[in-house]
Image (cartoon, rainbow, N blue to C red; front, side):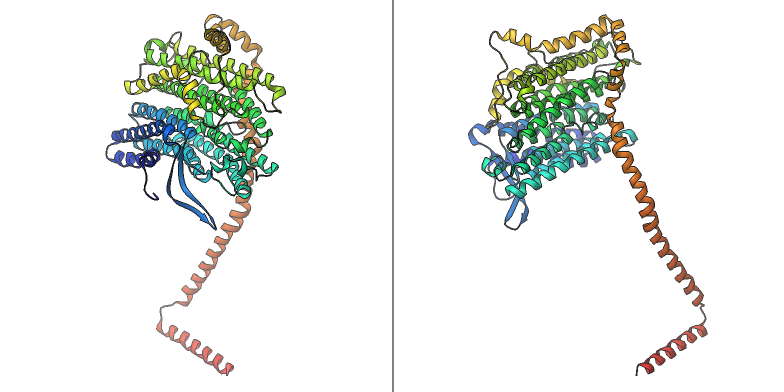
Length: 631
């Protein structure tokens, strides 16, 4: 590290370096004792969390903290250090990543207890956290890009952790490739910003005087390119189909990627680069319409999923759409608020689902579950609380952030969006109803009725249950605690969270705001418990829609037809025309020449001295003849 560091600088360095060191140590220790590798990984992330808390508490007095780890890029008169930067905005992300990450690590101690590759798993998990921290703490776009690529690599390793299963390995490759497609947008944005603004420092790029150097058309290009990068990481149309397939990894991976870290990176990028995003009002408008479409598509697909993890995966895509709705109307702090509450209830849902899968002997189909409230009461309680939170029922955490997003849509000042604000708000409300419906459906199929599976389900061990219960508490009180305190404190110059309570009594406001959630839950309860015949009748009438939703809008089939099949055909053509004809042909020709020379040499080399003397005599005679002619 360059120069001497103060206590704050040292603490900030610990935030990033501790998980990075833990990744190496957990693997090394795991070669000696695999069970200790998990303990090392948990301690590493816990130390990072404590350091993040200490830095966050000191922000009010000391202000932002910056540490230059080493010199890095230097060309001409321009130099860029490898620098990390901790301010009020990044502090929220650090607390979520390390806090929820610590709980997921503890949960993994029980979930991966019998897995032979647990030391490798915990090493990857620590490396993932370290990469995510680099992403949110990078003071420049290139440093952020290091973390951006790091989480992409770790997601590939973790999603395809059980790589002997070819389907799981394929899911890891799909996530990796689709994220790399989005990364093109990140690179284009950096090229445009550096060419016109002369810097890639995030703090400087928030300065209106610096951004004024961007021509209008280049501001649009940079904004759209940044959003395209975000669609890859945060699973928005057109790069969203990788995320549901990422369920191939162990359930703690799903919780870490889909709840607290990687998928929220796009939201963080939008918040960090809000100055660029707002240069052209058509960019936020584009973000909002794409987000609305993504939220609607994912929510309708989730309505008919039977795999409990797939329901939660499509729910994540839909909730990310809600976050981008807030970005589209310029309320980045509200988007950040939903990032935090989503981390609480979605991590709780995923870990609860993992406990269900663990207790039901690796069964994931909800049609083979049911009645688990008796066998798994603590998991049932946690899943139920998180379901109420994501459904937007007051006073649970999701109510406050969702209600703030819906309110922000109605109060937008974007001239492009203003005429459609009512329509957008109506569609978003209907999506909220769908969310409550499919989550209530998953709860009913999993925990209510009678058990339809095989074997005897059982509650998860305490090391798994305790983190889930903590997340359930956060899903219950997190919104109330954060609504007017933490978020308002950490957003700094970004717009503050909209006031969600209307005039009149708080209770009435809560009840009115919870109506979409109540409607969705009531419909699900009625169809799946009280009127199953009506449910079947509706399915008979609406079978085309069900087929469309169950087919996931045939997005993968479209990609396969338009992109994958032509690329494979082109690669086969190139293989036959270039590789086999030119490369292999050149190799074969060279081999034939070599073989011919060898055969000729074998004929000449007889092993008889007299023959060799004759060759020497002929050679000397030829040389003498040439010498005489030259004279």
